[in-house]
Amino acid sequence: MIDAAARDQWTRLRAELAPFVARRVAQSDVDDVLQEVFVRVHRGVGELRDEQRFGPWVYQVARSTVIDHLRRRARGPEVRDELPEVSAECVDDGGPLTEAEARMAPFVALFVEALPSPYREALTYTELEGLSQREAAARAGVSLTAMKSRVQRGRERVRAMYESVCVIERDARGRVLACTPRQGDCCAPRGCAEG
Image (cartoon, rainbow, N blue to C red):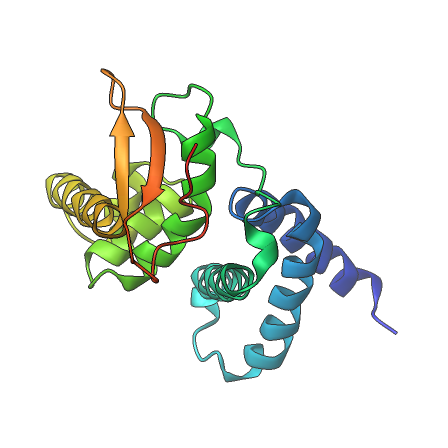
Protein backbone atom coordinates (compact mmCIF):
# COMPACT_ATOMS: atom_id res chain seq x y z
CA MET A 1 0.00 0.00 0.00
CA ILE A 2 1.18 3.55 -0.77
CA ASP A 3 1.66 5.74 2.28
CA ALA A 4 -0.18 9.07 2.59
CA ALA A 5 2.89 11.23 1.88
CA ALA A 6 3.71 9.39 -1.36
CA ARG A 7 0.06 9.47 -2.44
CA ASP A 8 0.00 13.23 -1.82
CA GLN A 9 3.13 13.70 -3.96
CA TRP A 10 1.63 11.68 -6.83
CA THR A 11 -1.59 13.70 -6.55
CA ARG A 12 0.33 16.99 -6.74
CA LEU A 13 2.38 15.73 -9.69
CA ARG A 14 -0.81 14.68 -11.48
CA ALA A 15 -2.37 18.11 -10.88
CA GLU A 16 0.75 19.72 -12.37
CA LEU A 17 0.95 17.45 -15.42
CA ALA A 18 -2.77 17.22 -16.26
CA PRO A 19 -3.03 20.68 -17.93
CA PHE A 20 0.22 20.06 -19.81
CA VAL A 21 -1.14 16.78 -21.22
CA ALA A 22 -4.67 18.14 -21.75
CA ARG A 23 -3.38 20.85 -24.12
CA ARG A 24 -1.87 18.20 -26.35
CA VAL A 25 -4.25 15.24 -26.52
CA ALA A 26 -7.99 14.62 -26.76
CA GLN A 27 -9.77 15.17 -23.46
CA SER A 28 -10.89 11.54 -23.47
CA ASP A 29 -7.22 10.42 -23.62
CA VAL A 30 -5.78 12.60 -20.83
CA ASP A 31 -6.16 10.02 -18.05
CA ASP A 32 -4.68 7.23 -20.19
CA VAL A 33 -1.68 9.35 -21.16
CA LEU A 34 -1.14 10.47 -17.55
CA GLN A 35 -1.24 6.86 -16.41
CA GLU A 36 1.41 5.96 -18.98
CA VAL A 37 3.53 8.93 -17.82
CA PHE A 38 3.34 7.68 -14.22
CA VAL A 39 4.28 4.14 -15.25
CA ARG A 40 7.33 5.47 -17.11
CA VAL A 41 8.29 7.75 -14.21
CA HIS A 42 7.96 4.88 -11.74
CA ARG A 43 10.13 2.61 -13.92
CA GLY A 44 12.81 5.22 -14.61
CA VAL A 45 13.08 7.25 -11.42
CA GLY A 46 15.68 4.88 -9.99
CA GLU A 47 18.07 5.79 -12.80
CA LEU A 48 17.76 9.54 -12.21
CA ARG A 49 21.11 10.70 -10.82
CA ASP A 50 20.41 14.32 -9.99
CA GLU A 51 17.30 14.83 -7.86
CA GLN A 52 17.19 18.52 -8.81
CA ARG A 53 16.56 17.46 -12.41
CA PHE A 54 13.40 15.55 -11.43
CA GLY A 55 10.97 18.27 -12.60
CA PRO A 56 12.47 18.73 -16.10
CA TRP A 57 12.92 14.97 -16.41
CA VAL A 58 9.24 14.35 -15.61
CA TYR A 59 8.21 16.88 -18.27
CA GLN A 60 10.51 15.16 -20.77
CA VAL A 61 8.84 11.83 -19.92
CA ALA A 62 5.42 13.48 -20.36
CA ARG A 63 6.45 15.00 -23.72
CA SER A 64 7.74 11.65 -24.96
CA THR A 65 4.57 9.90 -23.81
CA VAL A 66 2.37 12.48 -25.56
CA ILE A 67 4.40 12.16 -28.75
CA ASP A 68 4.18 8.36 -28.65
CA HIS A 69 0.43 8.64 -28.08
CA LEU A 70 0.00 11.05 -31.01
CA ARG A 71 2.06 8.81 -33.27
CA ARG A 72 -0.10 5.82 -32.38
CA ARG A 73 -3.25 7.88 -33.01
CA ALA A 74 -1.89 9.19 -36.32
CA ARG A 75 -1.46 5.63 -37.58
CA GLY A 76 -5.06 4.67 -36.76
CA PRO A 77 -8.09 5.43 -38.93
CA GLU A 78 -9.99 7.06 -36.06
CA VAL A 79 -7.85 10.22 -36.14
CA ARG A 80 -9.98 11.97 -38.75
CA ASP A 81 -13.19 11.32 -36.83
CA GLU A 82 -12.14 12.34 -33.33
CA LEU A 83 -10.26 15.59 -33.00
CA PRO A 84 -8.51 16.49 -29.78
CA GLU A 85 -9.97 19.34 -27.81
CA VAL A 86 -7.39 22.11 -27.88
CA SER A 87 -7.61 25.02 -25.50
CA ALA A 88 -7.47 28.60 -26.73
CA GLU A 89 -4.31 29.19 -24.71
CA CYS A 90 -2.39 27.35 -27.43
CA VAL A 91 -2.73 30.38 -29.71
CA ASP A 92 -0.33 33.31 -29.27
CA ASP A 93 -2.98 35.99 -29.67
CA GLY A 94 -5.27 34.36 -27.13
CA GLY A 95 -8.15 34.12 -29.59
CA PRO A 96 -10.03 30.89 -30.13
CA LEU A 97 -8.54 28.35 -32.52
CA THR A 98 -9.94 28.06 -36.00
CA GLU A 99 -11.10 24.58 -36.99
CA ALA A 100 -7.98 24.13 -39.14
CA GLU A 101 -5.71 25.24 -36.28
CA ALA A 102 -7.41 22.76 -33.96
CA ARG A 103 -6.75 20.00 -36.50
CA MET A 104 -3.10 21.01 -36.80
CA ALA A 105 -2.36 21.57 -33.09
CA PRO A 106 -1.80 17.94 -32.05
CA PHE A 107 1.02 17.60 -34.57
CA VAL A 108 3.04 20.55 -33.28
CA ALA A 109 4.70 18.34 -30.67
CA LEU A 110 5.75 15.87 -33.38
CA PHE A 111 7.34 18.61 -35.47
CA VAL A 112 9.01 20.21 -32.45
CA GLU A 113 10.49 16.85 -31.49
CA ALA A 114 12.00 16.61 -34.99
CA LEU A 115 13.78 19.96 -34.69
CA PRO A 116 17.52 20.09 -34.07
CA SER A 117 18.77 21.34 -30.75
CA PRO A 118 18.62 24.23 -29.58
CA TYR A 119 15.37 25.01 -31.43
CA ARG A 120 13.70 21.89 -30.04
CA GLU A 121 14.46 22.97 -26.46
CA ALA A 122 13.39 26.58 -27.08
CA LEU A 123 9.99 25.57 -28.50
CA THR A 124 9.53 22.83 -25.92
CA TYR A 125 9.93 25.38 -23.13
CA THR A 126 7.85 28.13 -24.70
CA GLU A 127 5.21 26.40 -26.83
CA LEU A 128 4.77 23.03 -25.13
CA GLU A 129 5.52 23.81 -21.47
CA GLY A 130 4.08 27.33 -21.60
CA LEU A 131 7.09 29.18 -20.15
CA SER A 132 7.71 32.79 -21.06
CA GLN A 133 10.74 33.42 -23.23
CA ARG A 134 12.46 35.02 -20.23
CA GLU A 135 11.83 31.90 -18.10
CA ALA A 136 12.96 29.65 -20.94
CA ALA A 137 16.17 31.67 -21.33
CA ALA A 138 16.90 31.31 -17.62
CA ARG A 139 16.24 27.57 -17.71
CA ALA A 140 18.43 27.10 -20.79
CA GLY A 141 21.16 29.36 -19.42
CA VAL A 142 21.17 31.75 -22.40
CA SER A 143 20.36 35.42 -22.89
CA LEU A 144 16.80 36.54 -23.56
CA THR A 145 17.90 37.74 -27.01
CA ALA A 146 19.32 34.30 -27.83
CA MET A 147 16.10 32.61 -26.66
CA LYS A 148 13.93 34.96 -28.75
CA SER A 149 16.05 34.16 -31.78
CA ARG A 150 15.81 30.40 -31.17
CA VAL A 151 12.04 30.56 -30.73
CA GLN A 152 11.60 32.59 -33.90
CA ARG A 153 13.83 30.30 -35.96
CA GLY A 154 12.21 27.20 -34.46
CA ARG A 155 8.73 28.49 -35.34
CA GLU A 156 9.90 29.16 -38.91
CA ARG A 157 11.19 25.59 -39.17
CA VAL A 158 7.94 24.11 -37.82
CA ARG A 159 5.98 26.27 -40.29
CA ALA A 160 8.22 24.97 -43.10
CA MET A 161 7.60 21.38 -41.98
CA TYR A 162 3.84 21.94 -42.10
CA GLU A 163 4.07 23.62 -45.49
CA SER A 164 6.14 20.73 -46.85
CA VAL A 165 3.22 18.35 -46.28
CA CYS A 166 0.20 20.67 -46.42
CA VAL A 167 -1.12 23.60 -48.39
CA ILE A 168 -2.01 26.18 -45.76
CA GLU A 169 -4.49 28.97 -46.40
CA ARG A 170 -4.34 32.01 -44.06
CA ASP A 171 -6.46 35.10 -43.49
CA ALA A 172 -5.09 38.66 -43.43
CA ARG A 173 -4.06 38.31 -39.76
CA GLY A 174 -2.15 35.09 -40.43
CA ARG A 175 -4.72 32.75 -38.83
CA VAL A 176 -5.01 29.37 -40.53
CA LEU A 177 -8.29 28.96 -42.42
CA ALA A 178 -7.59 25.66 -44.17
CA CYS A 179 -4.93 22.98 -44.24
CA THR A 180 -5.04 20.48 -47.08
CA PRO A 181 -2.55 17.59 -47.52
CA ARG A 182 -0.42 17.97 -50.62
CA GLN A 183 -1.32 15.60 -53.46
CA GLY A 184 0.36 12.21 -53.20
CA ASP A 185 1.98 13.01 -49.86
CA CYS A 186 1.61 9.91 -47.75
CA CYS A 187 3.43 11.58 -44.86
CA ALA A 188 0.90 14.39 -44.38
CA PRO A 189 -0.45 14.46 -40.84
CA ARG A 190 -3.98 13.14 -40.77
CA GLY A 191 -5.09 16.12 -38.72
CA CYS A 192 -4.18 18.31 -41.66
CA ALA A 193 -7.38 17.87 -43.61
CA GLU A 194 -9.62 20.19 -45.48
CA GLY A 195 -11.26 22.55 -43.06
